[in-house]
Length: 342
Image 1 (cartoon, rainbow, N blue to C red):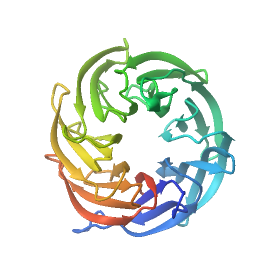
Image 2: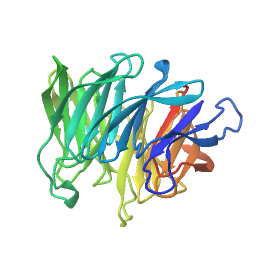
Image 3: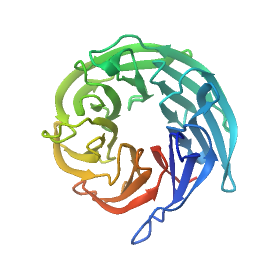
Image 4: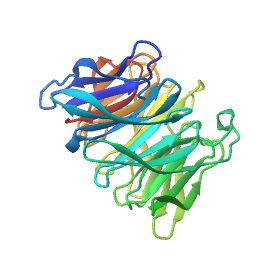
């Protein structure tokens, strides 16, 4: 299996890197990491493995947007781009069945929807824009950080600037607003994951270093706040920004990265949705923005943006804990990690 790393290209990075890992090995390692796509600032991307397509954030001169690539005979070839004036998106989501791409733009406060054909050609469908602000300096305006699908097939966004989770339908190629779950002021809503049955949502707050657990009903759009938990130790007083969040496919564990505390927090999900901290482990580097796991969720890789390294962990499926097995994987300025069988 391959692992892709992408991120900023301000220093040593040349774009997207690919490494290999043998998941059947008794002692797996990420090896042979090399630059496979030369591209500016591919800070996030998503893949359609069946069609061997990769969709990445991209910048070209004074324009930014997304680019598509097709992998053939081990090489990635650019297929298409959709660029605009202004800042680049920060998130790319994908529905490989509907062949839709979703992007969130932090600086422009926009949500966008694209379609793609079997060859990877892109077509812009529609967009929407958020407005508003929050109490913290980072919340001078709306800042959309996430845009993707819910278990019920609706669309959901997280907005750091206005502390909100918003729900949409894509109807007649237009985004129709359905509901809003308003967080406490200063929470800094960044990313979200859902339980498989769609009854619980787990929202990570970048500015507050917290996870909020809430119930939702995608028929009535009723919400119930359950509890909020810190992702960092109570006595940690330095700056921290919570970043990525993952939920295990058995719905038993939540994982969150901490940029500042430089750790991964592991929580057990109780039957009523409440969380219980089971582990907080070092990332063996600085500023872990993204992490991801293999399809069976037996191994997890976390990338550290500031130290340009990644760490590989073995995951215990019974108790959720992580055990480090490799700490010095090359991952230049990485902010995105993706396991892929392309």
